[in-house]
Image (cartoon, rainbow, N blue to C red):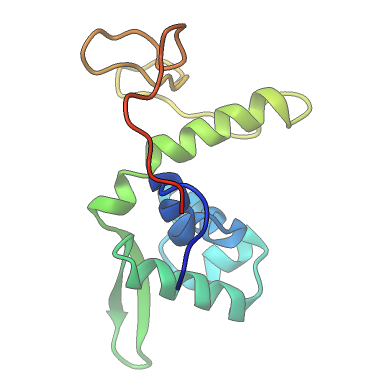
Length: 145
């Protein structure tokens, strides 16, 4: 496949997780749902679309399909290391939606291990300042094709 535009990890990541039903399935898995029927019910996705999205996430190494029953064969979906690494991204997307899209109180709240309500912020690993601070700029850009 020939790609146009700037070489970019965001574009590459969106090829894996950037579709609505993929993100909603990941939301459910991060909330602790592991079984197909519950994921389908909680996302509203049709079974065929959800099957395709879960297969793509398994093939990409984001989820692992684990058999929990032999007769009939039934499987659960567990996040891999790559899948668990998406939790801060989903929490950030949720916070953005709570602030700029959703009307009223946030429908879902998370508690941090420290005991307080979680409000995710992306910070610099070196200095601890917010990533959106003035002066944040790219130091290398992907090539444009």
